[in-house]
Image (cartoon, rainbow, N blue to C red; front, top):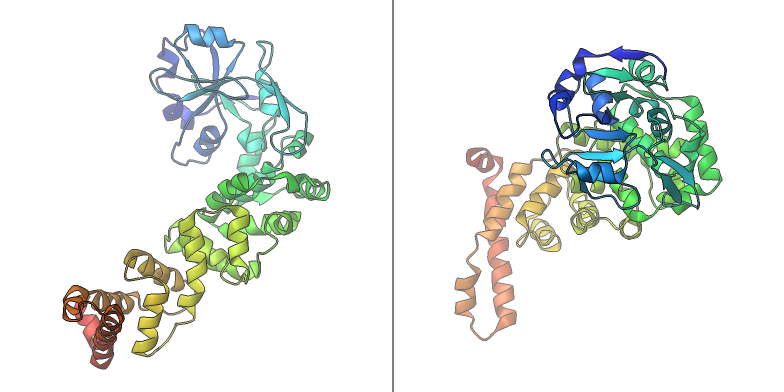
Length: 389
């Protein structure tokens, strides 16, 4: 089984479980990210548990709630945490869905850990805080290395994306040379071509919001996967830096995605390929329009941009676009917020009553009124904005 360590840093993660009558007598271990993060001194997140030597019937008798699809997973009746039976996996087809699973009571903890992706995610801990580390994951945590568990890594192309995401999350970790070489072989073998949009977007979106998103892009470029899963994407080196700055500015996901493809001419095709949420696709489509208006522009151009971006109906999105644009260039978001407020403050209803029965005249008069308030604001100069802050 390898060296057994006892870690006081895991006390909080397992506190109380040793006395839980529902799991008493079961061989249970906390596995994966919770153990890794505890060793890194990071806040505890969701706990995942693996159960060794038990059958689905054993779990049901204890009150666990079955929720698994392809393999048995159960919810603890009180904590609602996930408990999965120890399992092995065997490649039975192409892509990430091409697996058959075995969850017999004879599956050992080490066999279960061997099917995992990276050594730092293949460490188990007992309810008493004892570590089981047959794959030297603790060593790699200490050395800050992301290393694949074994050759079975090649069986699941999602692992290339997960490797990139972990590289983005843990900026001080390096990717082992042999792991990167294995990813390259997977791409050459066509495994990345089997990735479906939903899985790509799930991992990409998480990587975009990690500490250093550019590192995910680096891993995907170096492995050759980026050209397969996002062939439209352009200027990766430039936008990678944008994304890292966006993290410091705590922008939401739509802003990160818009920055990712801001230099990609066919960004609409990329959004369709990845099946991104509408809000993300809209930000990507509109950000270039906003960036085209950096610097001093006339009131007429200001109003045209407000209209083109549907800012009168969606003011929050318009301001979010300018906050995203501030990653790329010098932007006074407060100025644009005031311009929009003035334009939206025009009483369109009153104007419509003056021109009842003449829709075209109403439309023209409302636009003229909005333009006039922007002209007036423009003539007031920067001092008016500073007073309104």
